[in-house]
Every structure is written in C-alpha cells, then in structure tokens.
Length: 133
Image (cartoon, rainbow, N blue to C red; front, side):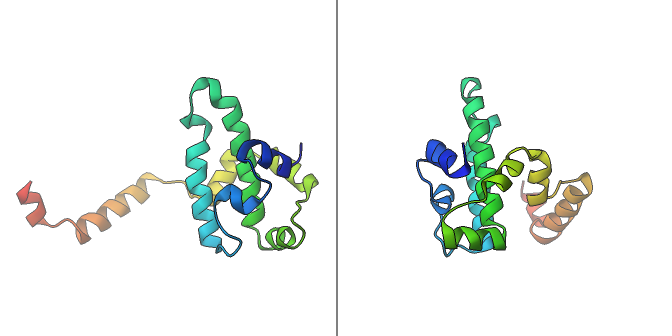
C-alpha cells in the first residue's frame, strides 16, 4: 500500500496537509510543529496495548508525510502533482525511527539541563522567590 492510500486508511484523507491539520501555505516551522503535536497524539507508547500495532503504522505514515512536507523539493513536487514518490516512501518507511526522531529533535543531555536550570534560575527565579516559598 502506498503512502496516500495509508493516509486515507489511517487519517481519512489523501491530502498530506490535512493529515497534519495545516494549510498548503504552512511554513517550515508550522509543519514541524504540527508534526510534533500529532506525533505525540499517535505515538505507539501513548496508546493501549491492543492499539499499538495500528498506532505504529499510523506513526510511520505520519513520518512519511513529514518527510515529504519538510523537504523543500519533495514538497514542491507534491504541491504540483498531488502525488508522492512511492519508491522513496518505501525507503522512508523502513527507516530507523529513533534516528529520524533525533534528526528533528536533539538529544537532551545532563549538561543541557544544567545550562537551562542555570539560565532559568538566574533569569526568572530570584532569592526573593526562594524566601517566599
């Protein structure tokens, strides 16, 4: 089954923009935000055990949609033809999703947390706040 058929099956539409609940005029940032929001809703770890198989497939389809709409050339081709390169989608479908996720969102390290904490405490949390609690 191709990507557009899977979109129809899991999202009731063959329109990639409708899958992400955005318009064709959405910016790159809006595409990423919509993907992130929807991926959290359909992620296999967030559903009941008996729904995990479907959720996994839905998550893969969502990744394929994002891979097309977040790539300028692929998106332009989709916008023009309203079709997708099924051969390329099959490569995307077999992708290691952990690697794909890391391309979108950087891994948070302990140093990142400490830097954020230092910034937050220094900027928003003063000693006055600490004394009040």
